[in-house]
Length: 85
Image (cartoon, rainbow, N blue to C red):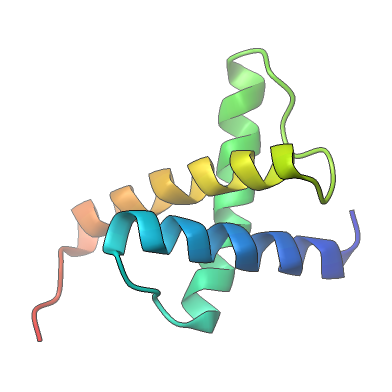
């Protein structure tokens, strides 16, 4: 995949995961980073369980990246904790 496809996939997956876990977005930069890292984590986890990882810019890859981003966000909140405003 090209770098532009990774950015688009990361942005979409990070935004969805952020909405699922936080109920609010984390900002465009954090959503992007979370989504790209989540795509790698999701691809790694899916291949460990015998399924295909990120295959391109399609719905399946968005699902894989989103699930990976949810895992990354959950671990992030466990390590850093929730900030109160």
